Image (cartoon, rainbow, N blue to C red; front, side):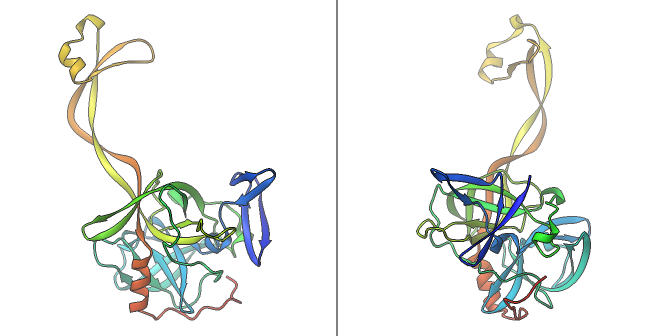
Length: 289
């Protein structure tokens, strides 16, 4: 599978050949633009992988991620960033949003990525629209160093904007989408449907999935005539693929489930934290990683 680099209105687009959909006869549209791709970083603290992304505010660059990704750091520390198949140590200052908002802003000593315009806003987001999130599930990435200045190219997944709720006094964005470990801290991006042919904006920071629990059962093979009304009422009977009748007996143990509800926090929290601590390195459009 190949990747093509395109130029449209001065903004380079990376088009994954499987990430193109038709808008009309013969018309195709890129699913993600490099103002997102070229900012996403795979990071590591100890043995824990995560995702972060660069955000430029008022001419300075900051690194945004989930607070739990940098739980191993204090107010300062060493962040490892994957570049050219090596883990490059970067000393960062760490600022954290107040609980329960799971966002941290990191201040590196120098600019790390390009500065293609990436607007941080929820303006233009509509319920039910497609949104995307980029990151490194289980540390996986696309090997295309020439496309991203030596940084690995993030995986991309799609979600549907379901709604926004207030949880413990904080605004959570809820989406229908399956999250995997490693996407935490990545950008949640979208196209403003009020503007045609626009590049992506960043609406939020990925926290993870909303969890639920389910009981663990022990199966018991029984004859069909052994099924009781209580079994039926409690829906304990299943048929196996080989035709056996199974009674599922609860063990008292539970398992954590991924509900397919993806949780992100509004990017406005990161912006507020940045503006309280406007000390990022000055960024330049001429910079090349």
